[in-house]
Length: 102
Image (cartoon, rainbow, N blue to C red; front, side):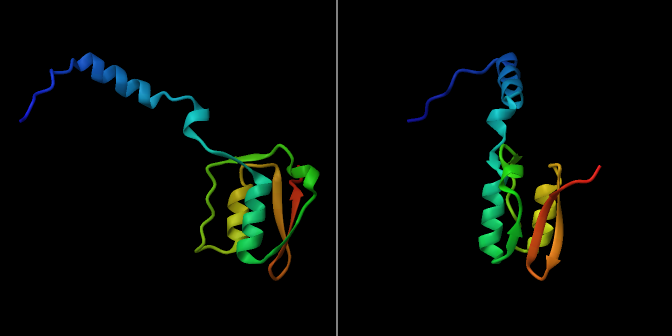
């Protein structure tokens, strides 16, 4: 047996579409600790990543998912782009994370 739903008013549809686009940022983004992502990269690439833990406290990144097709270096550069930190390669598969120079 088929039943028909009552027709929807165009204004109701427009209002609901607008509400979905206007979600607050905390509901549309996934904040993760920079330190957690660095530890994932370190484990996945078996890399040495040197940093001062105090520099990492409180720093979060939004929706970062590392690309397993890229190198550790490229992923870390992308990760650090939105921070005041920079990456320095010290030897093969070993990196230092330092504050950016002004």
